[in-house]
Length: 146
Ligand code: SF4
Ligand code: SF4
Image (cartoon, rainbow, N blue to C red; front, side, top):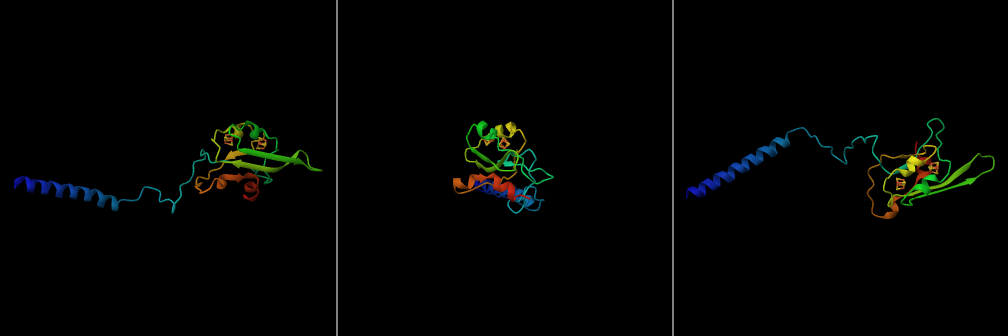
């Protein structure tokens, strides 16, 4: 009989202790980020997928269509094409795509670019249902970006 009451008491006591922790947490200030209702500021060092960089003054991208990034990419995920146009010095970029499904974020493309035309974006919400959602048209992105 004594053991029965002792077990009952121990069980009740552990329940009270557990509830104490729960109730204390319930009334404590929230310290976690309530994603997706709240979003944290991304650190400047965050490496999202690569993106074309714009000149701050002209708003034009910095790519000269040299193809170095495409050639140096170990995962073969960049396609760059440019064409010569009358009256324009150098080549005009016509295609710049990235297959992010193959990218290892090694940074070789960013390092090799002679005009510093590439940088990492800070987009971290990249979940998707199909591979195609990770094929990015970087030329279109840079043209649409403010
Ligand atoms: S970060 Fe590396 S793998 Fe990704 S596109 Fe650039 S060179 Fe290719
Ligand atoms: S290395 Fe730089 S300039 Fe050359 S194609 Fe790539 S992004 Fe453009």
